[in-house]
Structures are given as structure tokens and as C-alpha cells.
Amino acid sequence: MAQTTIEVSFKVAWWVRWYLVGVVLTCRLTGLTPDFGKVEATILRGIKLVIR
Image (tube, rainbow, N blue to C red; front, side, top):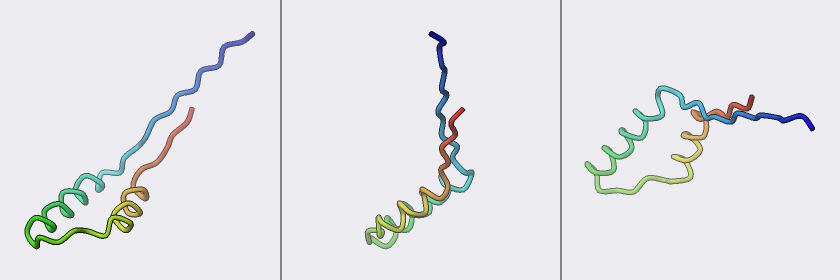
């Protein structure tokens, strides 16, 4: 039987890390908590699944 190789990787957009830094900084300065649903949706827009 032939062997099949699948490579799975994630590509993270350049702005995702800076977005998270901004969210954390804003939360620490204001003492408020973020809307985690909106944060998750924004982060998921910046992460792409690559399957080869």
C-alpha cells in the first residue's frame, strides 16, 4: 500500500501578535476585561490552516 504524507501547519498574520499586545495593554490600563467572543473572532481571521 502506498504511504500518504499530510503536512498541516498554521499561518499567523503579522498583526495578530500586535493585536493581542494591544488588548492586554488596554485591559491592564483600564482594569476592564475584553469581550472574548470578539477577540476570538478577530484572532481567527488572522490564522489560516494550510494543508499539503
